[in-house]
Image (cartoon, rainbow, N blue to C red; front, side, top):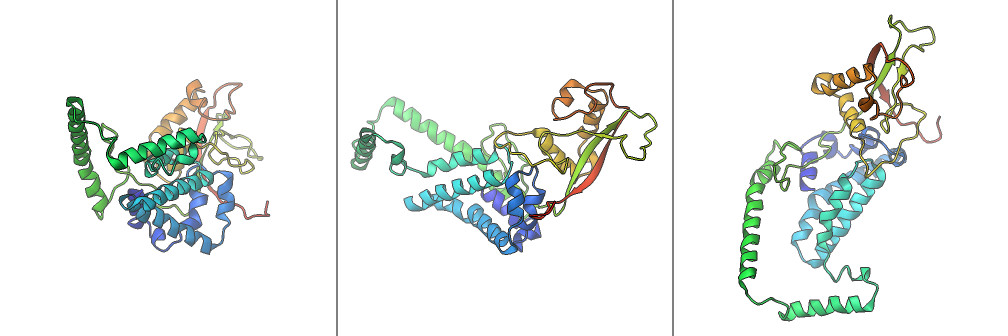
Length: 312
């Protein structure tokens, strides 16, 4: 969370002048229906959203180092923040995974309401009382000593692996999502350090016409439809979280980058040219599924905008 907050403050100017949320809902990777309504909110509300984002990502994480009430509030605010992101975005399983570490902010007493039976509550209270008096502390044994040594070694290893991550967090040239160590324990994290101000989409189209000269009605080119990414303006945005359409997500990156940075686009077009079964299984509609493969494939850029409420 701290990495995500710092990359925003150090990144796009709109995070500092509190205007990023004016564009964020419209330009996120895979929109869902709620984003349409969130995008229509007044500017003052968008500024409030940005401020709350900075508070939750940059301030709240330090609550876990304070007393019990602060830790509980840390867990509550972090989970609530992720739930809001789940409702307002199709960010796959990212937010669901982020909720899991927040659960450690709650102790047995704060989670006692999850145990409806009185006997379970009494058992929790009994264990807590034993810990307060020290009666629950195990007697030193050889196995306990080995366990403690192992825990110290594990903590030292994690601390050592955290050095480059902390250095990255403290650096003015902070990088995000560039280091993924083999243990998958300590890495550089961050999200939406920059926010695109316009939404463009790459629309794949194919034709069987060998001359590639459109007719007067423009009916030569047939469009490929993806599962969830914007394409047909009449199609309602989908809801997929926590599921993840990886290809739809990558198409979002391809739309604001050059194809040289996304060589897989060329490979995808090549597979569509031969009606490759595995490639076409990744999309919702292949216009050439019941016939010969297309002669040509093209990808065109289109600008997409949310309509205003009440318009058509």
